[in-house]
Image (cartoon, rainbow, N blue to C red):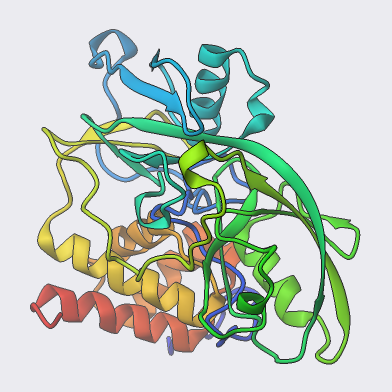
Length: 333
């Protein structure tokens, strides 16, 4: 069957590097819903997980990014549960946790917690800070935003393109959560949904963004980052392996990704940003997992429709993903 025939609903590609992204991690590891990457639903591949009594007891250390004592958390299987455990440790409402970074308290999008946590990583939780409302005149089709989400219902800004419409508005910063556009609440929306809404706003009109910035430590006041280059951050995990968080089923301890997997995930994540304005390493990892053993693009298209049909990936994108995985397999980096 030729690629695309009989496939489910399609959306035209969002070709601007704009409006949506799952963080290094796309944070895409939560319940089906916004943020980052948690869109990888469906049954998991491979052998069933061991019974709870035989699973290793994993304890992680955490702090609030703006400053706090060190807490200990364990017993979570996805991002939403992780945020709940952090909230319990610091006696906060779970809804106050915006996102987490690994091994740094700074709003560093290259170290955003996504679908995997190194077994020796230190987790810093960023909580809600100042709320703000900003009017933006859309003078260009591309606003210059890349959006990600946290896997638990919050979409936020991961990157601001230098010289773009948004770059000239100093009140808007990397790490800001997008609560609403023109009064329409975005709580619970996926990153790609927020990206699409921003792209569809008419050029030559003014719109209103309701934002919440992460609470900052003293040494972060007045810091405004445009976000790092895709894939420029250090590899997650420094020890024996990683804890992989899944949208369905228990978390699993896995070996660090192979060189092929790392490069393929990076290339697919770049394609997500190019086509859809999002970055989501967990979503990219799921796509690589689905595609690495497929014999042709048609088989990949069928697997993506079955597992990730809600994204309605266009055929051109699927061809490019197939090519990216193939290039990584033969070492064409």
